[in-house]
Length: 330
Image 1 (spheres, rainbow, N blue to C red):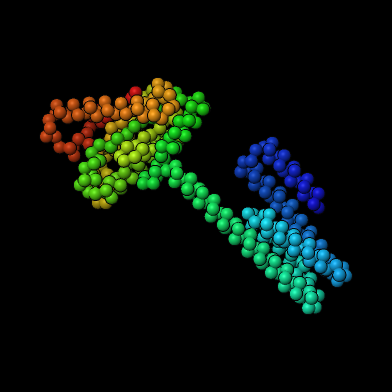
Image 2 (tube, rainbow, N blue to C red; image 1 turned 180 degrees about the horizontal axis):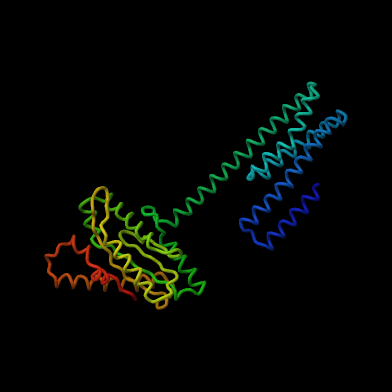
């Protein structure tokens, strides 16, 4: 039986190396391994029961040692798979317990008590180790997620942006990326007039709108403060970037309802193409920032021509034609 287990394990490993360990292959391999493991456990249980029933008393100690060793091995080796380990230890130990109880003399009743303690202790140990491992994995995943996410808005952070650009460069997809640098207009007065808590809620609302606009594969990022970025990873046509930028300007120009208040802001966007500036984050941000500055300078000049007395609350709710002036492409 042990030789058969070794053969099956070797063949499973060869199959996994050949096919790769995807989810379906892994589940199929686990089912085969579980069937083999439980069959071996049942064999041990049957051997232990027959050993107590058929062998003379002097050999019962050997049978008990075999069962104890097997139970300890199960608890130690397969505790991270309790769906296999718990039935296995039960199949391996329970028949001997029942036989010892059936013999009913003091020595065998004591043996039954010891084996029962082994069975219950092994099950408890496996379940406890499994829970601890799951908690540890979940904690690692949480810490990994926090390291890649902005804690306020839940958007990706600079690390994710840098990672995505590095992947684009490695895949030779630099020409298809566009970085949009987004700076919110009139955000500081919101903090000054309503407080930072309202400002935080506003940033979360902006993040939500940006996240709704990006396509699968694109990345919305909070850079810090009231500055955001959106990375387009598959910009196939020259006007793709302009279309997205206009949509983001329009989305942020719509009033936000924050804690019962209607707040109007806006956004200025500068964009930089990987085709021109490569996949270096610093270079893309610098190029996009230059375009962003041009946008703001152009708007300030336009406002100066209209007059210094223009109502700031109406400027953010501009017409579509003037919103289009809030974007630029490098």
